[in-house]
Length: 394
Figure 1 (spheres, rainbow, N blue to C red):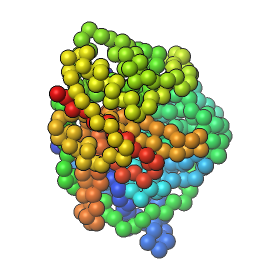
Figure 2 (spheres, rainbow, N blue to C red):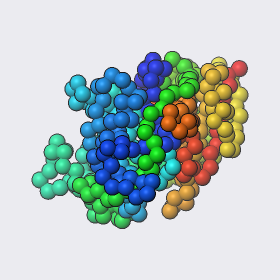
Figure 3 (cartoon, rainbow, N blue to C red):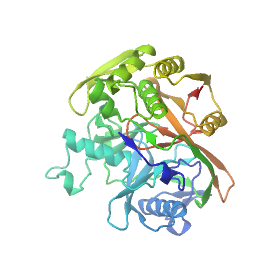
């Protein structure tokens, strides 16, 4: 349930969401003014240049590119998977998104890290999502599976021609049939800006603690029968402050206590990937601070909090530099109304593009779904609202 990865993070950015778009001119097949057509080959070339500029080991190879769609069926980018040149094992991913000025939504160069698409494909295999006639999970024939982004950092694979999607954690998600009208073997035209080369450097970075603590959604659901992102974020912060020692309380007891203290309300119920009935909750952002500080007080770890709307990047960096943690809550408008997600923040990066001089502000977060860090572009344009809850131990 915990991963000691900070030693790697301190020396190299394994995942960065950079606010830039770049191309490799030698690979460009077509252009449109200052735009270039993003072909599959160009995407792989971009991804290779991207990895090489961050990691000089030469051990990471861009292996496969899958087009990414929104729920309207519009192609918006692609997901590129990396493998190790030594043994072909997974070695991260890159997600390009041309609906945002940044283009690069997120990536990872960590050994063993897989893309949300790869994780969702694996979950689809477990749940028996239909594949091409005669195909098996080992055939690597995924023409019947479509990669769809439902909202920032939320992805699903959808069986072509259906409205049934599977998330990377195995949850069933309803997706517009327009998105599933595509096939992964097709490649729609996407044009991207040709102004950048992709060379950049880390200007500043820091993280809280010696270990990165993150419970996965499956951990929480299987232990408690419940799940709410804000409660999971509070649990991850508590685990970091207390070194995973809840003073003889189980994970289930801790989670249920934080659920109650934060007045988390039932949103809906449904079965998870293990077939267990789960209660999913919704938490008012303003309740996060009082709930967690109250709990920490009972654990002999007194702390204060500050809750704010529209926090600045420096609010998070200052907290990290003081060796404390924050929780960021991000909102986005969807066809179903506002949707939000809260994540524990344990670090930051500032990245400078060497060609343009522009910088990107990145939060290192435990996303509440998996074990590994998520590197979040703090300035991502599709957020409709942002809240921060910052904690300081006494």
